[in-house]
Image (cartoon, rainbow, N blue to C red; front, side):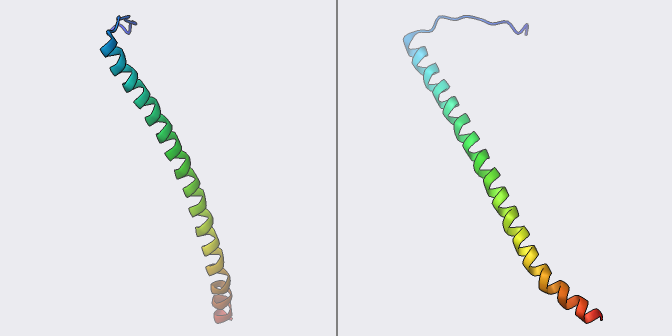
Length: 70
């Protein structure tokens, strides 16, 4: 392929098909972007919860293990 642009005149039927395909493609990209944003938010929230849980479980556990060693 020479990577050249080709111009084609579309019939009304073809135009309707292409328009629908392009609209669907655009909507799919929007939904994928939205999904990526939601995944990023979920990842952040999950990390916060894990860090909070680890912080709570470390505090008393560290105190007990130090006491047991003394």
